[in-house]
Image (cartoon, rainbow, N blue to C red; front, side):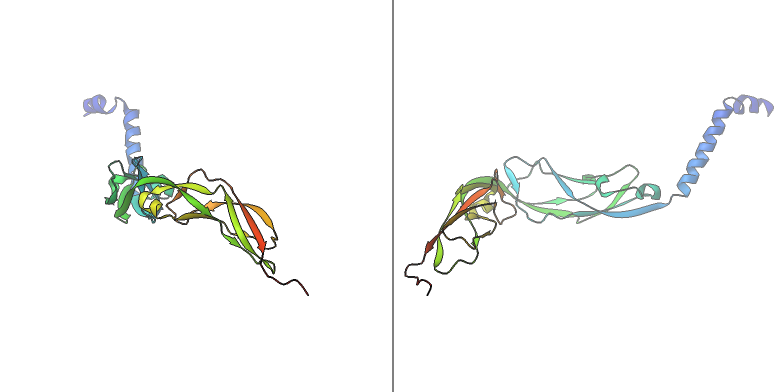
Length: 225
């Protein structure tokens, strides 16, 4: 027994004791760190969308991801630590459904994805298109008696818009922020912004629009008594 102790126990005794204490400490850490779960609302990231395509869906949901892991890790997880990535490299015009599961999620080490809600994402795609549309300013206000609005001139008169082809084709015109022309008696120029109501349509190189409001006297209007 003494020979066995001397040959197999005494060599590297300090290292063996350290290994034993480390194993005991690790076991105690795991035993006192039970698993926990947390649900986080995470934005969906789209990768590799073809250059000629646009997403033609207005409502892109935020996915809820439930992850499970040691309580000490769960307590430190933040929404930006988890990423949902959908690869759109093979997308084509039309509609397609994508599964959302653990394969699409990047999460911190020591965590497991339990559930993703929604489990699927339905998207519509259309070819990107651009064209010029007329700017029709929106003029409001109360005009003085005997005056009426003769003409509204926008400079520039048109703007280029881009987006999914079907939506671009349906845009009749762009408009501006409301212009209050109350008190204008002859002509006045206002600086304002242009926009298109469709949220999936973008104005290319937006610039300030100068709108000139021109008034005229109403023919036959009586003067003040």
